[in-house]
Length: 469
Image (cartoon, rainbow, N blue to C red; front, side, top):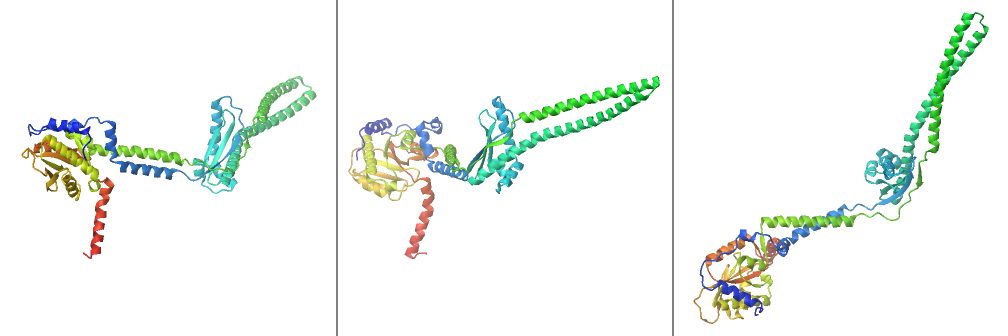
């Protein structure tokens, strides 16, 4: 099959530039000349070689995301209001919600609520992971939510916990006020007893003053009467102050809002979103990032030249053909390669072309036989073959038979940069006209890893069938 017309001028120009005379020693790009910044398609090709590693890490990330998605859960919500004044600012509303959350997430209160609801759960786990409290805007109402894998249990726990919050809040606020009232009542009673005692003393002094006849005795009694009266006035003033404080506390009780559950929780009918899709997407993205990073590290450790055009540019020769996988290459691909090799040889005035396989060794056992049959259709015959090279010669004698043998390199489309440099050094030493490059596709990593054990198993089965040891 003839090469396309647009490729012929490029091949001719490359051959004309190289010339057929061995001439001065050729040079090829070194690692320092080719390790510069690569374009995006080249980066994609080089990292795409590790698609199996990237796919593996993405699959692991997806599996982790599926495992992270929690069990099916239901959330029941109750609404409570505390005995606090209506908040005037957003900060005050947040403070009220924080108060409810602090009480509701206490393991002690959760344990009491579980007992009241008749549900057996781990109080610490429920308090830490399954209870939440959020304020409703700038109001004093707080939404208390409890999640559980059973909808009825979630509603019972939420209602019991809301009641526990109210009771705990009342114990805190009313307990302090009742203690203050009790202390005030004790002080008022003690002052009352002292005042009553002074009233008795004053009554006795009044009787004594009325019955005494001596002026000096009367004056002494009046002095005692005035002292007792002043002491009684002080005690009475103290009692009035304490009674005023008691009235203030009682008034605050009357004006303070009553804490209550304004909306009881009902059993939810729909399960909560498990978040599994989000975890799967996050796991896939994380796996992709790790896979690309791992591929980049491997490519930095063992850099490769990916693609026939990149390898041809590295060697400074035209790309003649890409035959695909040698063991499954179509006759069309081999014909294209043979035709372009013939065109390159004729343009250089050569009758012999050495097809060198690199790295050393034929790409497959049957490739030489297939190449021989295809080359014959173009008037070429394989003069000699070996593990490293095939020599193609014109079937009929042609002028210039004594000219140097041209070289066509047969190399994989993905080649380590180290092997490419060694190939360049080999071609420099051969000092033969380099006509072009033919690339083929090697088996992937997974196929190469499985080829040896599968081949060994096939050989054992064949020997067992033939009765061989």
